[in-house]
Image (cartoon, rainbow, N blue to C red; front, side, top):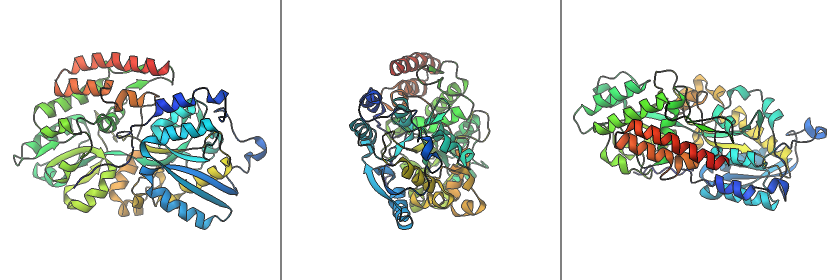
Length: 446
């Protein structure tokens, strides 16, 4: 069985945010792109997103096709006054295809955009300011904070959450019971001790597995533990950002624990070469105690594993607490040059309504409203309920340089992890990491 993850998530993304920004540069002053401060005029403000007519051209990433395929059909069957025309963009070309359309003045009306790419488009003046409409949503406080953060410039919103793709800690209750462990770890220290106990069972079992050569996978699963501990690796507003590496205590603690797990042979040797293509396969065999991974693996685990051998929990913080998750997935954005923005916002509100959000788990994704987590939802989708509960504690690294810092082979994150975990030089990794993170941020900011 292969658990190859098909979605272009923050851990898997080969996004072209930098290229998109280059394509868009100067466009706001030229052809086809309105200013990012553009909002629907006062005359239509009261009717914006209400009983719109015509068509809405909706671009969604092919990796997320299950939700738009199903819900667009439902919308079109129930809205005779407004029709959605769906276009699926290739996974690794979505940003560049959108940037090209915006520059050409042929932008779609609505886009499901990988959330880590939203800041680049917002900053370049390519997206409609929807602040007043987001603020008017009665469920705004329950929307995914990380998704919403990535759609924010200052105090203004240029998008709204669409779908969530979240990281969790998968664990094997059967191995936990055999090792005398009562439940999933809530601290770094507990995770390390649990890994030791499971490895000590002596049956060829490993305490923990990780995708050691998949830079994005590591960021997707390790960064939430830093956030749960009250720290981020990048601080400050776009254009004036600083690295927080050298004196980041939770980061140092987590890298130290991963090194001890690696040096103590509590993780499979093959992890060092795991590039994400078969990420999760070893856990599916039943001899790995813990896997910081993607909630989306649940589809495969439900098909291939006894339910006694897998469960999920929030990724732990250094000192306990509710844990955290990486708020991956997509935001809804309306290009500033959209021909039917009112229709687009009507579509957005319909997708975000409770009845549609409750369909997301069956279609393979997590809702972006934590207020739909009811007892009936928990009973029907127990694994998704864990991820959804953690949604309100989720976060992101808010930066234009995410891919350059974390996802790229040889990135500052990649080098720091290798030096700390495989070579055991945690202090040196943090020191050099501070310099390389800062220089990367400076190059992107400039």
